[in-house]
Length: 467
Image (cartoon, rainbow, N blue to C red; front, top):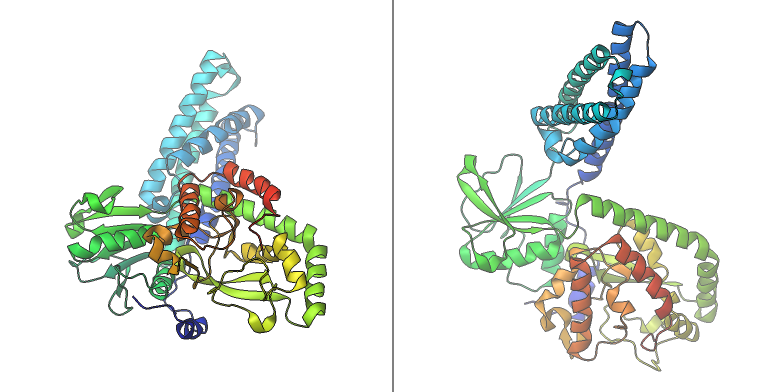
């Protein structure tokens, strides 16, 4: 493995981001889902209004529209659960149309069932409601066909990003997928080189599905890397217990079977909730704390005329590097960009203002900007400097699972911090205690737990190990 020397760190600090990074399709898909939901609601009402006009001779006839309004929430509930608004529904309009019609039929049946037992069926015109359902079904199908046409025209028919990594395994001709050679990018699944992992993280960024084809002896290494990157990953392989496979996927057209070895720690709904929480908390905090942030920046500037912010490269989601912001607490000429030396009590590098903001954790507040940028989260594993060590070993040398803590965005605070695992990592146990808490947090994430950790953080802002 390449040793992380100061010279190597300096060279990588100025490297440009690889041009292979692909744009995310997730936001496009979310906008498409939202548009389809709104369009379905509009078509639902339009169909029943038209049925009322044709049968009752009155546009938007109250009884017919009441049936539509009663049925619409039930339809949306069923449609959301039967994948009418899923990735496959965007890529296969016949599948989408079938699911939408099934949701419509079930919702109509449920409303009729409730109406029968509540004796309210007589309040509706059966002919108008039946005609409305027929019009709705036709319009839902037509909308799916239009959506498919627009996706073909504007997205080139692609609704997911797929990547095949060829590492010397059997051929895997995946339609619509980009292919790269592991050798071309110097990707080695047995390596702990953080720069290789950063390079891999950039290649995997925004990929919805990653398939690796490699020899048998390299499959376990690739399984570990895909889990650490937090992506949906498959390995072309026969079933193997040691890989920790979570499913099997057979591609009949290719006569190949893959093992699903990673799915990412959070689903779409959880990612939306976590990001919404991050933006709400960080935005509010930046607004409320802006006077304090300005005052601290002025105090730092007045003390020694140096910059108010300290920017340090840290390890983030997918083991990619990002620039983390902190208030500068050390003398400018003694800044440690690589984190080779942990801060200690009575540290001669720390300024007077720096000592105060470190004790009170105020030096971490500029990371609110990192949260708003999307590099960090409010709650998550704390990001570490690349040169950080425990017992003179790099963190990944202490425990290989260290890389798996980066399958989520790093946090401004975390479970390890509220449990008191802060400060210098002089012993290996200082690192393993934090790692255990980080992996526990990732395995059991919930929005409620994030809120609890934020509230508990208030109690440990001033800590004996914060110096």
